[in-house]
Image (cartoon, rainbow, N blue to C red):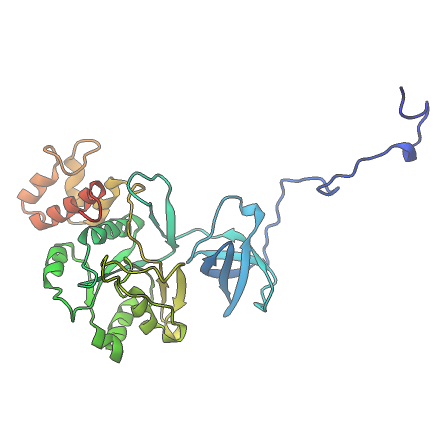
Length: 335
């Protein structure tokens, strides 16, 4: 049965409207040349706070970014309402190329990488000398992640009024990692903040450490006008309670640098780290790998580094430190 007559007119033809709109789809996307340049300060449930020309703007990820995400420290292009007034929402349309990416996995068997921060150039590894006890394996893992990401490590030891730092520093002396030692009295009078701030000037520094080590307390002393909540160590378990739940980038006074406070970690998986890249953090040993067999782990009988060190080209302690770091991927933090 014919729906229309023998000679239907155009007006007789019924056109079903396109529920997604009548505009044809195109692969051409706008270039957003007028987008504002922003820095992601924090991410909270799909909403990103960005700093744009001195204003904080709330934004969301544009659909055109697909599965690509933005993290704290990212440089982004933002369009829409950039006034930063209440109840306004902009869109992040582009994530600029990153100069560095600090990653971790939940454990060494987890293939899913979590980006901690982007574009940092220094990693401050904060650990307490007591209450809670230091965890050298976690420090080693953070060092490996820093070297892999191309970040300069900085060891910050807190609570030296409760225990001496000598033993811990002795085990890291051969690595040549710069360090700072603080205590509670110095935090109270501000002298600790002054010394730490000097090491952060002109840099974007990410702070990492497990809960209860005084990481956020130290950040609060560095940026007192933006105080964050702090917790206490559980007397039974010896562990801290998570009070920082999201990473936050904060400018140091006089815009002398940036500090990124991150949530406390209880593990730092290295599934994403290629052990062959760790050698780049040892420039005195790297030339000696030229004679290594293919895919050498640098911890096997045929490794050329043994002969390199035996010939006096590098300190044996440095080779020991390299192999200790390479072995951290095979050990749990609590071992």
